[in-house]
Image (cartoon, rainbow, N blue to C red; front, side, top):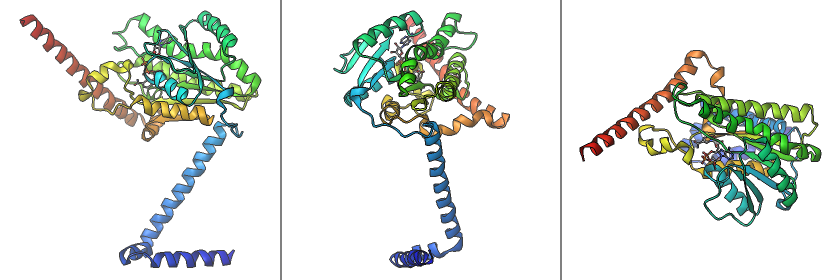
Length: 341
Ligand SMILES: NC(=O)c1ccc[n+]([C@@H]2O[C@H](COP(=O)([O-])OP(=O)(O)OC[C@H]3O[C@@H](n4cnc5c(N)ncnc54)[C@H](O)[C@@H]3O)[C@@H](O)[C@H]2O)c1
């Protein structure tokens, strides 16, 4: 042991001697040495923390190697935005993908992709399409609950129908698809359920009350599903992942992308989110992913003192309100100009 320590000391002294004089002085400074030690310690803690999260998420079981010929991905909402990108990226890797969407694709599907027009809020439609899928392709081994809706407006400004639709698509449908497709995964002790949630799972803002409730529910659904798989169904190799993206440039947030100069928050590409989802699929790791990663801190907002929580939510709401005011001004001016013509 002491021989090894001597060797390390000798090696570091030789390495130190190669550095320029100012760098040598800095590294010999006791404060700099303590800071470097603390950084190293933090780095070690971080990787222990990451490993613990990964192993726990995977129920302390190793991953099997991904084999496209044995896997079948069922993806909801694959005709637009994030889902469309995921479908294309998986197809490019030779993965067979079944898309369920309420609208027909307006583009040509890759060779490994099949489309079934389905309203995922109806258990009858899901059961009917499931029969067809089983007959034509076999059992899905990966379920990506991606389809979603987001309606603009305040709690008082939205219709009851729109509010109910948000819950039906963003939350209830997860129960329906999982109830249909997870029994086969449990029997095989192999599979993956991926929930596309949102940063809105953690923070409620103006105009997204229904959306935020539905995404907080999607998170609760994911957590309970994990627990049931582990403690009731003894299926530790059925993976579960949840993805929480911040704003993504898709038709869903057209009101923001049309006026983003007044909003001032970064809007991600669908590629960034698709990369994260495809990584979960292909590595077969469970996980909770916040995109971008620097916003992972958002998940602890509700655990902070109330005044800090309110500050965080108000900061975002004020930006949204400002964007709305500008949108209304632009629309008013356009109307006035039209009436003058
Ligand atoms: N765009 C964002 O800023 C953002 C941010 C965080 C999370 N998300 C989430 O990402 C997911 C994908 O959203 P997107 O931004 O790509 O939106 P999008 O509107 O581009 O795509 C949503 C897809 O879901 C389909 N769909 C809607 N209702 C359906 C139903 N009843 N049955 C079957 N399909 C239905 C739509 O037809 C569409 O193809 C959603 O769950 C959304 O909440 C989006």
